[in-house]
Image (cartoon, rainbow, N blue to C red; front, side, top):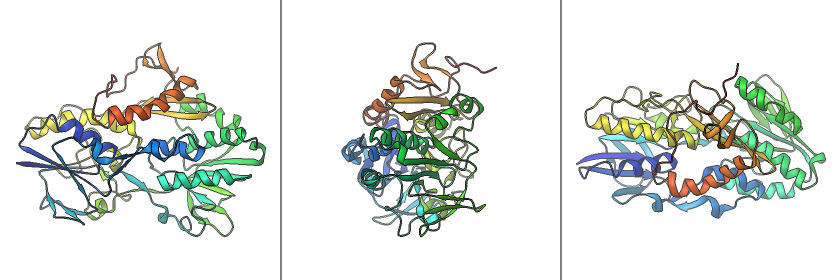
Length: 410
């Protein structure tokens, strides 16, 4: 019997075993490994600090989404012996594999930035990329009486690239609703050259931060946090004072990826961007945030990529050439506050463009434009995630990005 081992039962790992299990015959044994029994809906973390979601909205039992016929092993992963085709586990016997899929994601690592996880952590310095962090930030915002709130990104890449921008927009709404916006100075600090870096998106949306009175600090690469003075310091010695720092720490892949020689400097698996096959290996793949792809680390990418991956994986194990090629398709809602949101749709080669999605000229969602229906699209996505995407069911959307319904500039 051949053995498929999937490392990580998050979004990518769960989605792909649900897609593959019905298509692989009884001569394949599938094992999925994860370090805990709880599955978290990570896009929901954004809403917890503002009281729009609570913990029960984002937590489920992992086993509920694992299909019958798949073994779930709860253990930390110590390493991969690629020569022996073996996964080394902290708890339990090692696992041999014929095919290996790495889907262990990327994770905020505050220890990578000096001073970030010191005494100020979860006091004047917070994150919302973890469940504990989002809950702690809710409590902090309830007690916040005014001052300078800085939202910053430590380093690229990081998962859900629009989330810190969304946080700034929702914070503006939150403080206005509390009648204290005039007592809060909002600052958005990013390593990018602007909040929106693509030309069309910048032209269409660049005014939003100014209109919401959010100051922008661009090309800002933090070197350390001076917690004694409540100051963020960049490599070029620019200082940004804060009363509350809401940060996106450096995101890193799993330690075993780097230790096994499969990762880049941030422990993300280096892969072919069209097929997800790991560089230098014939039977190791990486999906989702664990893969070093030149596109967003976002759930929509996993969804579109999983369709392409499934086709290619099945062809390859049957000795056929891979035909499908992933185009980097990503699709992201951007909460802008006051019950509205934006939507962007793009891929490796095409930047976000205005138009309607998914039906040309009809929508109902508006690309690069605020609308209430976009907001409800994002809020409804949680139900779709739990009931459709995780279970490997198809949505009526093609995996490749279509130009129909988009307005070309110029």
